[in-house]
Length: 492
RNA sequence: CGGGGCGUAGCGUAGCCCGGUUAUCGCGCCUGGUUUGGGACCAGGAGGUCGCAAGUUCGAAUCUUGCCGCCCCGACCA
Image (tube, rainbow, N blue to C red):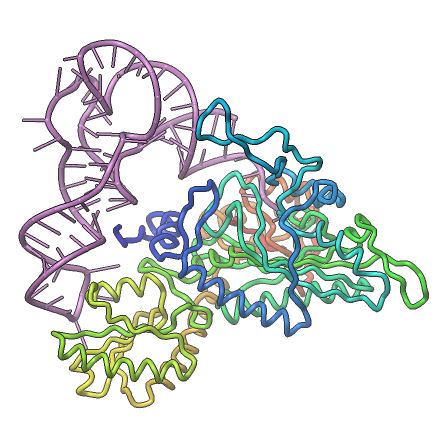
């Protein structure tokens, strides 16, 4: 297989697909719309998951697990939620196969084994969880419930893209129950902050926090908060959502509690989730034509050591030195690999680890050992430097932090340069067509206008930024009065 | 669901129009050797239901019919 990537300038989508596959993050599978997440991609997800999990626990949440199957009658209980997801549900109707009498060696669905009630494979778990919470909640003393689950969900998408939109994907979904509206809203915002902190601090992807418009809101939510990121091709990507569900699910599933005054009240709810889609965001925010660029904090491998030798004797000398360096780095908690595989030559390894986005590469030959140095290359800037082996661990440790910051800053600058104000329809269209990125513009606040703009330009309102500056203006499409600008973009 | 394209070794492909030895080439893979500071080279080797089925024919990757699958564009995607 050629390891050459299509360049971003030639075909951005093809570049993305090439990178996912040749970078060995994931592969197509035998199942339409479903991908195989390969070990390297899964290691990346594990690092993201572990960090998020820590942050959830630090904010008082616990993990649990609910069933994959949702009986149709439960699924349909919250009407808006059901309606929103109905078109993309996989449904189990039978529970048995049998030998096909007309087709030797083949199986058929046993018509005798039809389920009394169909089971929906969860596209999201509000229904099954709220049906469960009904049994968990009697008194205000049972609240709040702060539960998260790590799970897979299925959404039968018409068209899929590796990581960005697959029929089955991995995610976490937090589902919380509260005694008061204030507390639930606070939780919704708190988790949005957790997401934004994670995505910015660990994935080095800058995000804009905001609220979705009614059109873009989660089915069944009162308010949907989101973080929006900008990809290198100027398209936006929703990186995470946190929903204030009001009492919609409590009412649908009749979940009430006795308050201190001995009165029955409906519970207030939130849900929030991020998925393996974040990996897509990570790739498209940072990587280049040579391959992945992974932020050190979540990179499966932070440092790779490549020996450069001539003959067996020199290899032994370099092995010894490299192992010593590896031990030093490992002792400092750095994820490091020594690749002395003899099948590939150094040049091949250099290209390979660049493709894989390993932040730091250390190359060392006899020449370096004699001078007590190593050649150190950083993936983000591709700079190479000769660095003393004295204090190398500390040097690398601090370099990794610098790189984390540098990758973030680079993405932040790009993002900031690509938020443009439009004050007329012509400007609006011109920015979308010529620059892409976010367009900050006035909107009259109606769903019809939003819909019309989407039809005409494919741009959607990504969010109404939190703490948005209030400013009188006129809607770019209708000219009707507007109190604030909102962010438009074409999105994934 | 509408429009277009494609199925030949793990990957990418030639051959198909105009049927005829052992199905082409590159990458990758295996063995041995030489190499190793930016994707090495030499020699030898393994690997194929030509998407599936039926038909035409002395003979089908190639022609005919039916089916299956995938990709791209659109519709769809809280």
